[in-house]
Length: 196
Image (cartoon, rainbow, N blue to C red; front, side, top):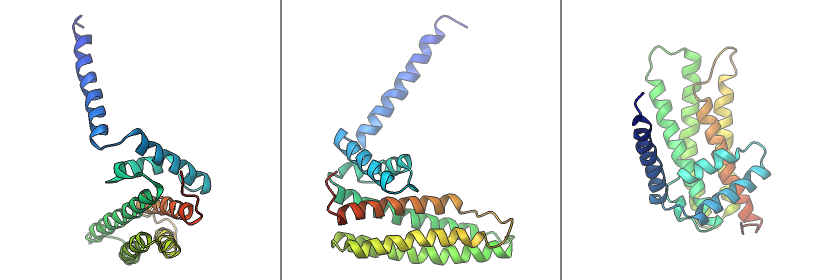
């Protein structure tokens, strides 16, 4: 090893750190935005033992426009839109899986069921956003709850035949978690507990 090689490692390390800092600030996260997300996720995780605090924080911080959220109501709208994007992406993934012609018939049947569930859930999420914007929180709550049920129903379908492994376990889990986040925020707002 040459004596100068340790200093050459410092440049890439500094550059990586600089890029990380500039990327996080270019998304517009301020201490207030990040704090709102962390406080909201803490309350969400405390109210629902099935919800992961880390998943909540990571998901909301990665969501487009989350850096613009100044209050719980704005964060709630972002959470439902994030759920809808997840549903759309998962439906596309299911369609891709169904292109495999050599798939076991039972798995294919389950995937078709999940495709129907996710297709319906996308429409439900769209209505959920509209109801949320109109401050019809009870309706939005029902819609997001049905999306959560759709993810569970999809996953449970694969369990009906022993030895079958669901190719959608992670996606269904993520949909469940995103639904739980949105529901928690809706319930905070509904209970006038919205000052985080």
